[in-house]
Length: 118
Length: 250
Image (tube, rainbow over all chains, first blue to last red; front, side, top):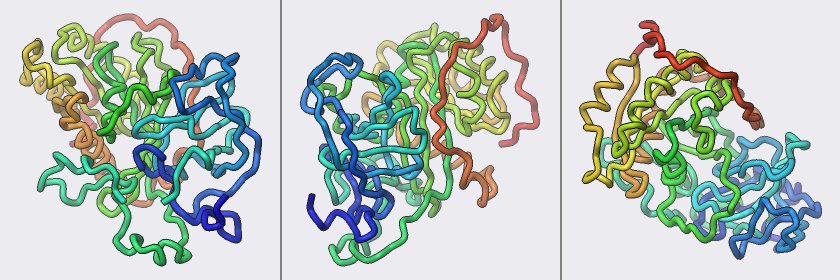
């Protein structure tokens, strides 16, 4: 990961934007770098998120983590897939760009590989 | 870098202090690379508001939520799992407002939307399809739900959608206006989610109305991580609602 993305205290130095439409997801300094292996369905094609047997997933490790959903500038939450809600761009709905488990009420992850930085 | 040039379209001269949050809210001071790296405490939202979009099946509720912002919609990129709700940021009167917008599509049976949906909503957008009379005829039933469950100070906005299908219009603008006039404090407009006509205005107007009623120091910490679970409501007898109490102001 580029060093310029993260501050000494682990915060995002640049705003987090949708790769596709540039919609602002997170402002500077609002999220913390977190490493965790999360499986997100592919963004490249119209994959069926609801189909859990779908192998077209990607294991992503680096994320921006926020603890309050109102920290987001703009984001969409999908309907439940099992006990998970995926995060998508609020404007163009491209995604999933992130992950939220209903069992972890205060954790919202945005995959660094699935967004761009201002 | 505002990559959404269509955002301010249609706001016209009258809405000069209304701008969309997101990327449009960057101050000029932030455009230089140096300025961006300057240590700045992130600015928290001033208000958090919940808005719900209700109305009969097929009236375009989901399109309204999408069209609130997006001019470059691409069906192929959408996930097949629908969106439950969105967090959107609006800058209005120098305040930064986070909206949590719930689209109730798929739960159109009047009694299937849980009361929790209504209870915490500060704004309710009731949508009908102006080319389908039955969706207009359903409005009293939706009002019944609002009267039963919604907070009395919730702002109400009636939207006649599909203005782009003028040829097929079955409900005149006057009919819509008349319905809204019967309900204290209800605003009315017609819109086209397809053409993005009036859509951003709808949300900004609703938020503006909510803010006007609200003491400025309120709502800063109202909602937190509330993912409502939607449970079916018990059957509600299909009778007309009582008139809304006259205490609702403006």
